[in-house]
Length: 70
Image 1 (cartoon, rainbow, N blue to C red):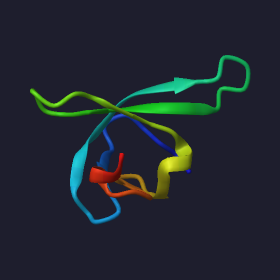
Image 2 (spheres, one colour):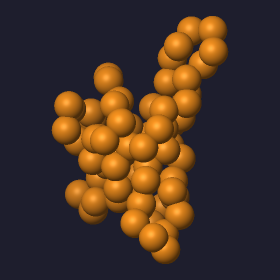
Image 3 (tube, rainbow, N blue to C red):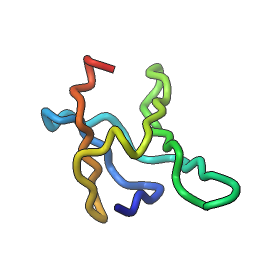
């Protein structure tokens, strides 16, 4: 699974949450540990891990959870 900045993020119900803004990688392995989803103001940015991802394509990341559950 490849998570890239700028990719749209949706919850399991298809609700758009925002887009990937930044990746936090492990300093030793380079593995993605968290990614930040940039949201429109006044909403706060959100942090997710690769374990939260159900599906990922080059254009969309679908989460395993509904937005209201997190």
